[in-house]
Image (cartoon, protein in one colour):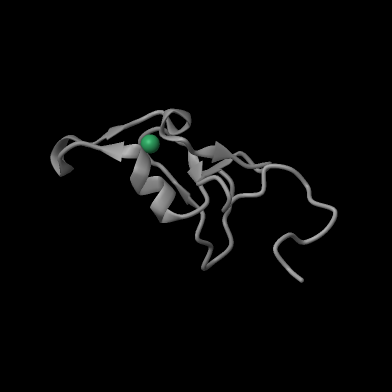
Length: 73
Ligand SMILES: [Zn+2]
């Protein structure tokens, strides 16, 4: 397990071991009642894996190195 910086939003699922860019993406892959939570396949939920191997929502993760910052004038 890698060390994450203090205050990082990245979270690791203790059940399946996958990393997520934010808790919102993490919540998406967990399903079922609280006492019987299961992990869903992130890819089947439309999540994408970024260059660091972390799952996030499309458009919120950078899946390849960008030469220029996007969305900035
Ligand atoms: Zn999981």
